[in-house]
Length: 82
Image (cartoon, rainbow, N blue to C red; front, side, top):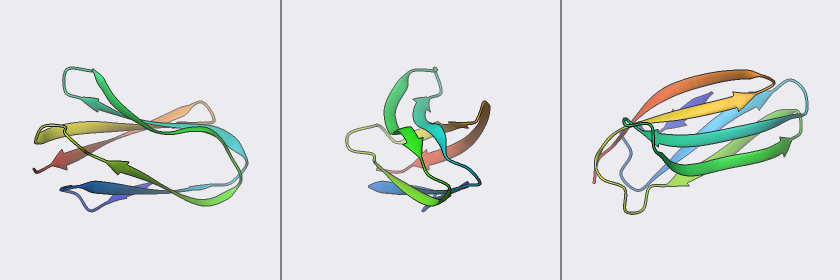
């Protein structure tokens, strides 16, 4: 899974590949653990996918993107610069 650009000014694109069709969930959290966005949620086919997070009015700072699929989670740090 990859995210670009990072740091983010207006929107971030997440790119991920799935070997099989699975349910995915991509959520963004602030450092206090509050969910600020759900970027992807649902079943996706095998292959390459993209999801976009439009940061909107969130404050500048560090956020965590949690990608969950097939019972596994990956967390990645994202820096937002407004």
